[in-house]
Structure formats: C-alpha cells, structure tokens
Length: 538
Ligand code: NAD
Image (cartoon, rainbow, N blue to C red):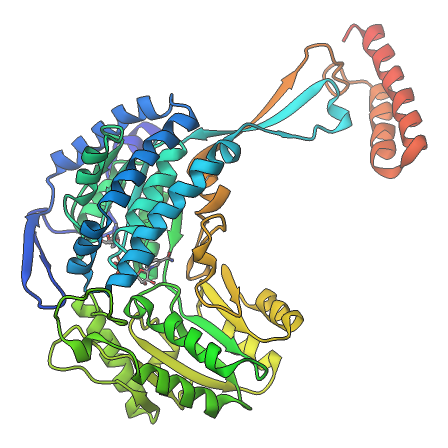
C-alpha cells in the first residue's frame, strides 16, 4: 500500500458499534446512578486532537522550567481541594478513603514534587563520550517533545493513573489527550482542576468514553500511547498502534508473588501480606496475590494472617455508610470484577482449597469480604489468573530454588516482594524473580518512590514511567554530533589500497593495543592518513 493511502486510512481491529451508546456511572457502594453521558461523536474526537495539536505548538516551545511552573499550579489546587477530590474518587470507586488519599492523590503530588526538583536535570542535553576516532567532535543526546500523548487509563486508580502520566507527558513538552475508564471517569474533575488552578489552557483534553472511543482516539494517530489496563486490551491496542507505527507503552496486569523465608518476623510479614494484598480492595495491578511461605513457618503464618484479616474494618461489615477514613477495606468498583473474584474463589473451594476468611458476599453487593485461601494448587484459577480483588492465597515452598520457580511460574511479571532477614539471600532471590519491580522486606514499596521507574515484564507489559525514564519515554531521543569543522575524515572518499592498509592498522591499534603503544601508534597512523589526504587532495 502506498504511504499516502496508509496515512489517511482508518484502521479498526474489529467492527465496533456506532458511537451512540450511553455510559452510566454508578456509586459502587449503593449502585445508585450518579450521572450518564453519551460516547463522543467522531467530530468531537477529531476536535479533541485539533485542540491538542494547537496546544502542542505552545508546549513544545516552553522551557522545562516553565512547564514545571504550570504543574506547581496543579499541586497547589490539588492540595487545597484534596478532600473534595477524595470524595469524588470514593464516590465512583467505592474504595476506602485512605486508599483514595494515599494511592491516588498522594501519587499525583509525588510526581509533581519529583519533576519540580529534577525535570530540568533529566531533560537537559546530555553530553556523552566521543571516541578518539571521531576527533574534533562533541556528542550529545537531546530529549525533545514528541507531540500528542494519548493516555488511556483503567478504573482502579482513576486520579493517580490520570494525573501521573498527564503530568509526565506535559513536563516532557507534549500536549495530552486523556481517556479515563468508562467505569470511573470522574467526569469534569480534571477540567475543574485545570480551570481552577490556572494551568495552561488546552494542554490537556479529556475525552470520555469506552473501548470504542479509545480505538477512535488511536485512529487519530497520536505520537505516543501510554496504556494502563488489562493484558487483553493492551494486545489489541498494540495491534492497532502497529498499523500506524505509534510507539506504545503498556502497563498491564499482574499476579504478584511475595516470597516469605523462615527467618522473618511472622507478625510483620503477615501484616505486610495483608496490606499488600488488600490495599485498594486488592484492585491494584501490584497487589500481593500469591504468598509463598517456607514450609517451616507456613501454618503459623496462615494463622497470624487470618487473625489479622479478621480484625480489619471492611465494607462487607460496615455497609455503604460514608467512610470518614476509618474503613480498612472498601467496596470493589466494577460489577464484572466482583463476579470474577466470586468465580475464582468458588473454583478454589470446589477444588478443595481451605477458605480461612471471607469467601462470600451478600447478594450483588460490591463489598466482597477480605478472603484468605490456603491449600491451593496450580490447577486452580485463583493461582493462574489475575484476581484483582481482596483475595490472598498462601502456598508452601521447601527451598530457595523452589520459591523462585513458583514465583516465576506465571505469565505475568509486574512486581514482587521477598522477605528474609538474610539480605544476601533476599537480594539474590529478588534478582532471580522475573518482574519489573521488587520490594525487599516490604510490599508495593517501589511505587512509593517516584524516582524509581515503574513497569512490567512478560505479559505485564513493557516500557517504564516515573523517574527520569518517565520523561524520556515521552521524548524523542535525538543524537547530535557537533564537528568543529577542521578534522580529517580518513574514511571519506577517495578510497585506495594504501588507505585501506592504514585503516586496517588503525583498527588493530585502536582495539588491540593499550597504553603508550596505542597512543604512539594512533599518532603515527593519524600523521600518515593526513599526509595521504593531502597527497590525494581528499
Ligand atoms: P481494561 O483493559 O478493560 O480498560 C482499560 C482502559 O482501556 C479503559 O479506559 C477502556 O475503556 C480502554 N480500552 C479497553 N479496550 C480498549 C481498546 N481495544 N482500545 C482502546 N481502549 C481500550 O482494564 P480495566 O478493567 O479498566 O483495568 C483493570 C486492569 O488494569 C487489570 O488487569 C490491572 O492489573 C491493570 N492495571 C495495570 C496497571 C499497571 O500499571 N501495570 C495499573 C492499574 C491497572
């Protein structure tokens, strides 16, 4: 197909319905309708990109410091209105108030803080060494804005997974088109923050809709896509993006293991497993889903963990009354996810697993009680599939090798945790686990440091954001060589047998000799090459 045709053709992965569907947003606690809206028309989708294209002409010309100053306006507004923001998050997700504050709002503030201190350094032109063979030149890396960053996010952290990628893409100089999840769109919140804070107009455009809208946004050919969501959707997005050669970064699902050796403080490790597995009602891509415990302490660990879980204040017990910050485990958000959790737990029960806590919900309530399961095996769905709910399984291992094998026996590779007082062993195991992130003697801790890159391996996706990598992943990385204009170029024309022999001995000296011998050899060859250049007028 000629390039011109490729440029205008709209490519879809599968036939999708006309964009007239209504999206209804409910409070997961009461299941009452909060509001509804229609999918955008094709004209509205195109208008969003036209607006972003115009904004990019401004963002690309701003200094990094000026962009950072814009994000500080967001910080001030978010800080001032954080209770209202938490209210909106809780209303649409049903999560515990502390989770909304610390896993959504705090993460947005953390990325602004990091980039306000370090973005100028991370995005500065970088001088790199220039080899001696390229004498008279200097080498640099430039980090340049890409254009329009399309960010598509899931429902579990609707504020964090909006603001963190938006801020990152903006600080790198891009304009942003953002599509939140249809389950938790927080409709109007970002616009309100932008408007109320005085943040640069038009740099962020939010488009509300579902999968169909996501596909139509990709058809507009953004310069980069950052997708966070399921592995299934990530593959579809990559396939669609491949048609246009749009670079994608995929932050996908997980099935994170926590390896617990026999020398740990059982009480602290059980507490860590409980929070790591149940925080955000287990709807965290990096939730601890599988706890692998050394056989020597397995039974004591399960007992301690069950006792702790029984002491939690959870939504199944407290109903849907408003949470003032004292609820530990909130409601689940999406109805299909509650059903999936139910199915996985029932499958484990039917196959003989022991359910120590929870394991049943009332009617169609989204309050699924925190559930601890042991006696599981690889044939159970709860072991092989992402649960993405308040369920923790515990398995036994006998040796370090077996623990690593079990931890890696998953198509996913997002995060992991390793617990041992023997730090040499813990670090060795951490290196052998196939994952993008590992916390030692802690859980979900790597995400607590915005300077650490975040991302997955295997079916958990690829690409990294946060830290310097985040800004670089939203940049065109351009290599530049500056020549003073006076150096000889021995490998330029004209070629000759004599030049060939000299170049051959240049390689021998450059890569085969060291010290003074190398220096003298190079000087001698340089002299001969210059003489040759003069003789041949080259
Ligand atoms: P999802 O994949 O169903 O949807 C995510 C977003 O993508 C939504 O906005 C949806 O409308 C859109 N979408 C879906 N299919 C699309 C397509 N073909 N083209 C364009 N857009 C499309 O995921 P979800 O149910 O919202 O979220 C749960 C999943 O997200 C879990 O698997 C979880 O592990 C993962 N997750 C990963 C991370 C991470 O950083 N790795 C973080 C949070 C959640």
